[in-house]
Structure formats: C-alpha cells, structure tokens
Image (tube, rainbow, N blue to C red; front, side, top):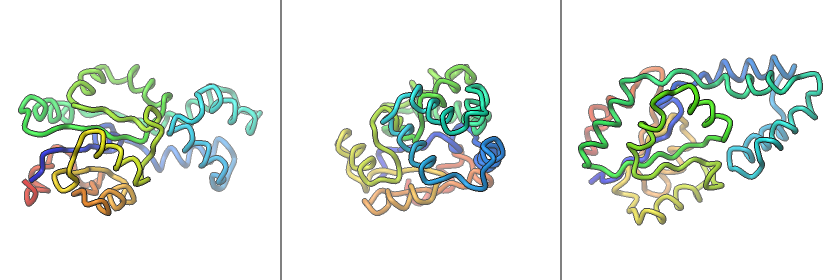
Length: 203
C-alpha cells in the first residue's frame, strides 16, 4: 500500500530542455563533449560541495573568453516553464492529506534562485510537500543509493510503501533496487497529473 509519494522536480513539475541546454553549452564552450572534469565539477556543485562563487570561478578560469553572464545563461537555459495544472495537481493532493509528499531533486543554488525569481508560485508549490529535499542542501545526489537510504531513514519509511517518480531511468533503477516502487516518467508522452491512472495498479 502506497503511503508516501516521492517526486523529482525537473521534467516532472517544471519543464526542462536538457538537449537544447547541452547543445548550447557545447557551442558556448566550443567543445565536442563535456570533459570528465567539467561533469565532476557540475556534480560537486549539485551536491553543495562547492560554492556558487567557486563554481563560476572554475568556468571563468577554464573559459577566459567568456563573461560571467554568458556562463550563467548557459547554466540556466535548461530551465523552462512550470505548467499551472501541475501546481493544481500537487495542491489538491496536499489538501487531501492522503499521502506523505516528498520532493527529491538533484539541483543547485543557481537553478533554485532562477526558479524563485521566475516562478511566482514557487513557495506555494514548496509548501505542498511534507519534506523538500534539494541535493545541494543535503550533500547527496541521485542515483547514489545513499540519497534514497537517507530519505527512508529520515522519515522512517518502508520502501514498499513508497512510490518514487523521476524522469531519469538510472534514478528509478537505483531506487527500485532498494525495494521502492518507481515510475520512470516520460516527459514527452506522460504527465504527472495522470499518476493515478498510469500507476493505478499500486493504488
């Protein structure tokens, strides 16, 4: 019996342009692919292991021809719109008080600051959740098993009573290995508002 719903943020509630952002970054940085060093540094930033200042300094040092504004635009252009019907969905779910609601997102300070400025109902959205976990605040990142074990332990949850929804398959695979029910949502063909139709076998 599902008692707790654990949601990802990007491409579950707020739309992302992952492909477009990657293409823009490669063009901006004049690269064919992002190096392991860049990928690792991005991951450190998402885990809150380095500050925003250190993050920006890293890019300015490695790409001295670029300005800070150009780097920030390349970093934030992945973020798109937040459809209002998804806010209505989570607000209704919160008002019913039938399930514990948890958000679990790989994200960083710059992205959250952008969302706070651009999404007028961000605080209203955040307040729908019983717990709101952002990777840079808890120093853990999906798909590491540690982050799921942390959520289970912090909230005294049994994995078989949890459903985790994420658009990245490696994240749902990692959660399922711990016994958590999962939905690998396809943002191109599925919408979180159809949760109880698509996963009706669990409810």
